[in-house]
Length: 167
Image (tube, rainbow, N blue to C red; front, side, top):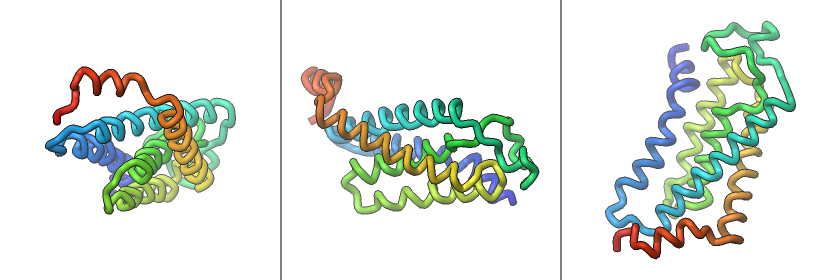
């Protein structure tokens, strides 16, 4: 039970640490690394905004509210659809999958699935909440990728011109 609580509440902190470590451990901060961090942040903002709006439009009771499970995590009685935890971790995972050039980039999906499974088993979310978060994350990464390719982000060009990046 303690392992499930750890996975559901604390494992999500792995993702910002992982992305920050990618950025900080690079000896040469190139345009592509800064672009990766920027794309992940934009897609994360898009995903969480979309999840928040959907939770306000489509209210769905949590499993412990209906009486299927007990409230172990002391969670609020707000809408369970879609999962914000699922949206955040899947968005970072898909961002790394789409934009990183590392052979271990698929391994970041393991914590995402563990977090989602733990939250379903603890009765905080339904499986449909996690599946919807999965698709919201894909959608937000695709939209961010389209925006970045279509409009060639002027902020990043500005930073490159003022030599923010080391050579």
